[in-house]
Length: 566
Image (cartoon, rainbow, N blue to C red; front, side, top):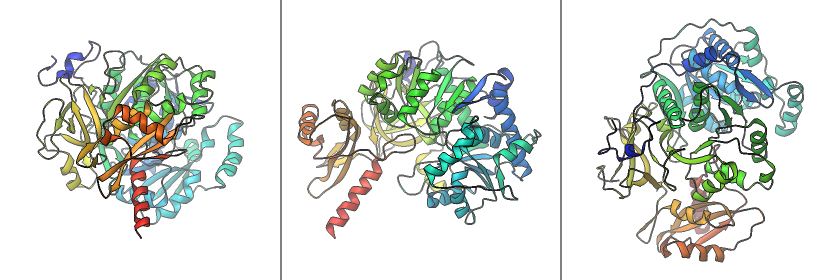
């Protein structure tokens, strides 16, 4: 029975979505086995022309698990995965879990310093990486606990003749030729697949207690922290996703996998969801707008989880009209605020639904979303998912505030992390003993239970005593026809404390001046919120999932200020 008094959002749940779910309490890797048994010949992965069935993916994951155990992997050992989206990233992930290990997702773009920190902090015993990353891994290995390195290459899953041509492309593109050899501490993927058996010592897993994943946060303040996610954290969030997308059918969907799996959003909303639903994943190793448009046109995906900058890039592609995007039925956008104009244009182009969701690494990641095929409120992150509680608390008091009052968003549910790896003090700062997690995001809830994010607590600008939320100003800038991307930061100001600066990427062939943008903003914003400085750029710094790195721009501004004051 919906508890509307304490959870007003329950009144809007359609009958197809339950407010509480009876979750499958089983290890996450069990779902690959079940899909392989139910749909052995169904295509599980498509990668640059090569396809693998569910039976093949399961078989290879089991071989990988067997090989890892042969190398001495024991329950609870951490294994780093440093791969882009490719078949090996899926096979290795589920193989590690089958062997009893804990996956440590590692960004392939990491520099040596970042890689060394993460390997040392996690205590990873093994790492799987691309051949072009092998020199980087070798350089830091001696300073870490890593004992075994497994090396693979994009060519390993390319069809003939692409697999023969690719090494030459790689040599030209990366100016590197790497030829690691099989040895006591270096292992080649092809060798493993040719020689490993299927015998795996079954590891007893307590889904509620045992970790499946150490997922490192972006580290915008201090060093990245390892978020401890259990098997049930990930199972619960993936099963919530299945219920939210209730029109999607098991064994029918085609999911576009361009969000990287080393990011928690791509891992849950694309990889784990696809495996649970026995969907076909069409994998792309990196986001390149033309490749994405061609892939949608050719492979007809029905689900396309993404991020605002991905949708923006596609909408502004000069050849957009040449491609048929009508296969897309549903998209949940995450990682950053979704401008309303982008949402409406993308739905117009595809005929599908695009809604905004919300979550964090610490919550596996999704806690809120708008309904895909039911009532939605544009500009809102939607309502809490099944079995998920949320409230707004005072930033200082920690007590729940009134409806429509801005405070910090706190959430509670089966998807909330166990804590930060080896960081009890940092865990205690954000996670209460009764399970409430403080997100660090500022927002409010309206009387119907719909939530709104106004900004990161750390991103709020205080100018002349006024609180300014960058998201509000960015929403206005996105409404201007010449603006493709916009980000607002606060920069030091001797008089106001901080002042508002806008970084703008213009649409191709569009022309707009600082004066025109200023005039436009003044029509829609109070004077104190209007940017005082505008800077036009060809591109903005972004994470692997396309989230604009506001903190990088803030740091740039600080450095400029320091240089000018010397």
